Length: 296
Image (cartoon, rainbow, N blue to C red; front, top):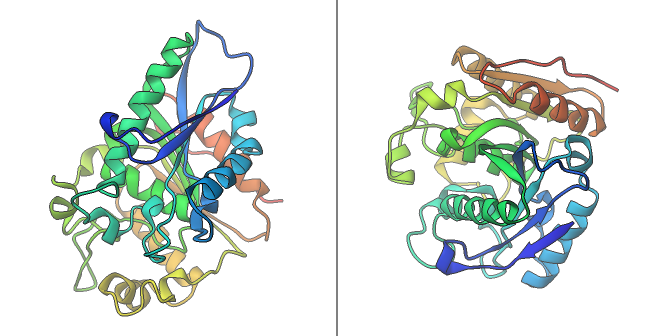
């Protein structure tokens, strides 16, 4: 069944979320709550109701819901028509610097959603682990990579793709530049109110991937032109997706973290969905278990 839970500021979240539960879950088992932010929320046309309907449509055909047989939560971080470059659901830098109102700290709002969802599942007799599985592609891939960077203690394993070759790195500086959020940890305390938790981030199993056809060059769009982080990405990591991806993958490997990366050369997303499910299944315990990516 799929349930929509509306915004509840009193409980800490000003956006709604969907909670989906596959049929046949055993009440004697304990499950990982799988989180996915809808990649379709890049839309800025229509109101909140239209975008919520779009999120439901995505969830109804969500591949991981059927392959993993575990509860799924999908926050509905609707876009703000008056600020089209404000990507709430991607945890962008400008969003994370908002200190009041309904847009304040969507990462903390998501933690409140998780607490609310677990309570609802418990009422249905469904037990869940304290940590979550986290997946995303595109804007939700940014959310995925940035949330595990901000809150690694809350994540059991993460699979993040479609980030245009850029993910947060455990660095304060790169090639002589300050590597600030969402690129790195130089100003972590300013953004999140606390020091970057490098120890737990490195322990968290993470799988980052890119797909050959995904060369959107989002970092060269109007949303980032003239901004320090946009200029740093293009100058330091590269102008093309392959260049950015190769540099990022190398830096992730050098970090010594529990991370694996893969670039899918095929112009199809099906292998990525299959590999994501395999990675989650392999990383439900304490040890990091890399998996073998596939190609069609």
